[in-house]
Length: 312
Picture 1 (cartoon, helix red, strand yellow):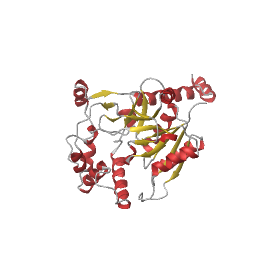
Picture 2: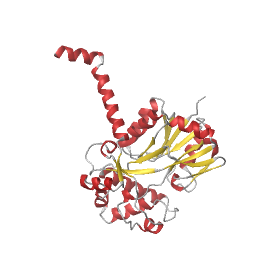
Picture 3: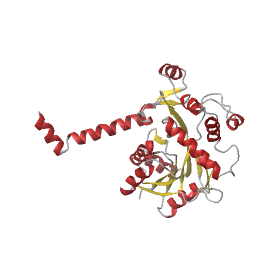
Picture 4: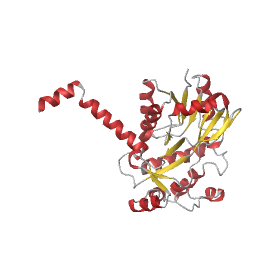
């Protein structure tokens, strides 16, 4: 019997990318997605409901705003393990797309099982491109940042970065055996297990699309303000990037910060030639192929085909 793979995520006002995120991971071989929504006010609930009706996803609103006595990620993992009998649990955010680099997802996890691997750390790479238009970020942002700018802990906490945020290393995410999971590290970027080996993955990468329109970015910062108002118990280093963006918002410089995360065509060529960035069309090509498939089906759908013939 094949292992059951369950994806965990916490959407909040990410309806612009959520459909791509869900469909991508279902196409990848994920059996079920569990989502805990954090009070979204956009079309996130509609997207979640649509996939829930198809049986591919289960979701529920987060029951509390204060996390002092509630651990949302561990709650999702427990539901995955006890209610849906997950064998493997993947934790990513809605703007993070897991990408196998060779063998498919299930084959890699089957091999990990035979090698007594209980958790896999997957490196994350930020994606950027030209300043956003109305097109989807997953189609236009095809520049992968391979070499992040070195930063110190002090620089992160202070927010005094040596480069735009997009060039700062995004921490890894994990794939873990459900029966080995002990707890997640703060932010869900690492995991403790009760048995087995933890592997540094060379067979996966995660592509991260954090900047997808100024309106979405501004909403993210407003959500962060509301989060910290309800959760003032976190240490100052936790979610340093949210705290930094809040300072930009309060200073009236948020749009300037947003626009600094994008790259002109000329600058992209320089970064590619220096080995700092690479062109990565993994998600963009997948979307294009999906669109071509839909067009093909429409063109060959009986009524449409008869209408087209009648016009010839």
